[in-house]
Length: 472
Image 1 (cartoon, rainbow, N blue to C red):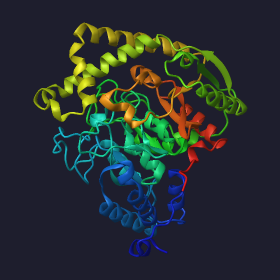
Image 2: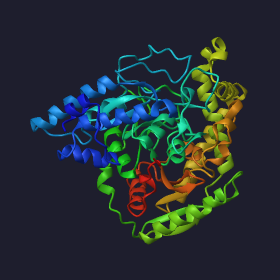
Image 3: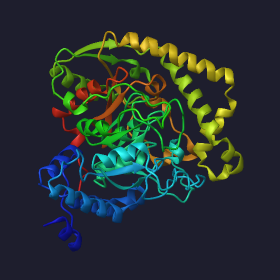
Image 4: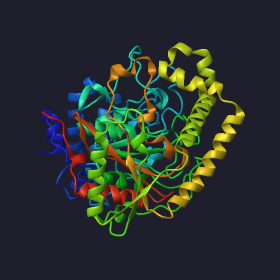
């Protein structure tokens, strides 16, 4: 059945499990873009209302883009690497198809309306099809506020639990097949936490590697945009499209971009992996995390890697500097609206962003000095190891009712440290606890995303956690 016939009949061909497989299937003529998009739309119809995947859907535009993609494929012209692949875009990143709300009652939706962020432009050029704007925590911070008339993103494995934030809808949307990959943003873990809690892969690249123009800011010196998908290989394919300097972003790095998919050899022979032991003393740690991590490390050893015990320098100090920085920079952006529309903000947004008012200029300067100092210490650590491995979180996803009042124990996560220093970090599934996914985090040297992705991909070649599907 052709894509047009499938659409007319109200049916959809099942999509391949991964973005990489889907792109190859379209390229080889085994599937059409129309079939991929119809499958994504059908999955969204089944799950969006219950799980809060989307803020807005672009079904008609996606079908039109799929038809154009199939025409291009039929013409015999060169095929871009992600032709016809359905993608979800976090609703703090602008797209031409519809307004950007930041999942907030406050945001001016005319902000950059009718434009594409640089990252969206690059995904379109690579052949991607934008299916809609995915749910987020308000302005990419905090936790759900059930008093607001907005979708509540829920964990696809257990709807009473949270997806993690703030790239929530991109996380649960990949799991249910509403799209094969998508964009998240990460200021303190907002790509990696939904990836961890939902059981997919998510990459925070090096600070500056992916341009942020057209994205609502949260923490100017901490924000990242990056890929979320089933596999590390999917993230590598997306990063090839996303990475690279753009003059519209003053923080955009000019470092050369690697062919990330070419680095995915499946072989870790000679690689030295630093194993962070700090997670063992984290509050509220589930001791079963140790077992899952040891299983993951054993798999990496069997692939040829050598394990080296390490301890990350000045963890508590870096986390304090990260909080000072994020709250100060968020307040700098939101202060006028907080003054004028206090009650319209989510409870957790008010608490977190307004706390920046208690940070002095001296505090902020000291936080930046500390961050710079620790970058040097971390660079010294990476002289002895090629990557560092930690859990992504110490606990599975919390229940949504545990987040009442806007509070959540951020100390159960292991992500914010790497926003403060800027190194690339990948979250990848490593098993389940109590029916909920758990995740391993792989961190590399600045601008060495290739090695990070190589480790994640090698691990996923010998495990299948990233391919787990929901029970019928």
